[in-house]
Image 1 (spheres, rainbow, N blue to C red):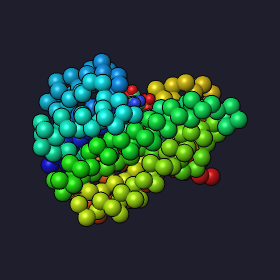
Image 2: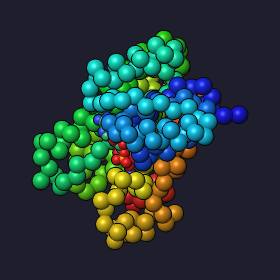
Image 3: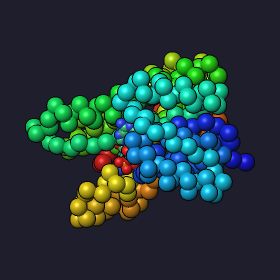
Length: 250
Ligand SMILES: NC(=O)c1ccc[n+]([C@@H]2O[C@H](COP(=O)([O-])OP(=O)(O)OC[C@H]3O[C@@H](n4cnc5c(N)ncnc54)[C@H](O)[C@@H]3O)[C@@H](O)[C@H]2O)c1
C-alpha cells in the first residue's frame, strides 16, 4: 500500500537536491506532487522523468516563495483544480555565507526573505485550505546549523532555528484541525548547496560524521515521508535531526 496515495503535495525548491529527493519519493508513494521552484526547466525535466515511470508530478511556473501574492495565487489554482492541498514541504532555501563581521545587510535580507519569510508565506497561503478540509501535513526543512550554530551563517542559523520553532506554535494552533507541523534538520547533504565546499573540507566533514559519509537527498526524503504520512497523526511540533549522528553537537 502506497503511503501517500492521491495526496496533493506541494514541495518548494523541488527542482534539485533535497527537494527533488522528496518530490521523487512522494511521487513514488502515490502523491500528486506539485513543484514550486524558480528553476522551471530543471523542475520540468524531473517531472517528465517521474511521469514516464507512471508517477504524477506537475510544475507551476514562476512561483516565488518570497512573494505572498505569488504563493496565494498558486495555492488557489491548486485548490480549484484538486479541491484539496494535503501536504506542504517548505524546502526551498539559499545560503549567503559570511562571517558576522563581514555579513552585509543584503546577505541578511536575502536569506531571511527566502528561508524564513518564504516559509511563512507558503504556509499562510495553504493552511486555510487544510483547515477547510480538516487535514494537513506541514513540514519545514530546517538545518543542523539552526540547532547547533555554524561559522559564517548568522543569517542562515537565524532562519533555520526560526522555522524549527514555528512548528511548535503551529502544532499547538492547528492540531484541532487534524493538521500536523514538524521539521527535519538535515546535516551535510551532498547537493549543489554543498558543491562550493572544497574537496579537503568535504573530506573533513565526512570524517566528523559518525556514519562516515555525507547524507543523500533520499536520507531526508524518508524522514519527510514519515512526518507527511497519515500514520504520523499523533506527531506534531517536533524537529528531527537527520545528520548521520550528531555531527556538530559534540
Ligand atoms: N545541502 C545541505 O547540506 C543542507 C543541510 C541542511 C539543510 N539544508 C536545507 O535543505 C533545503 C534544500 O537544500 P538543497 O541542498 O537541496 O539546496 P539546493 O540549492 O540544491 O536547492 C534549493 C532549491 O530551492 C530553490 N529556490 C531558491 N529560492 C527560491 C524561491 N525564492 N522560490 C522558489 N524556489 C526557490 C532553488 O531554485 C533550488 O532548486 C534548503 O532549505 C537548505 O537550507 C540543506
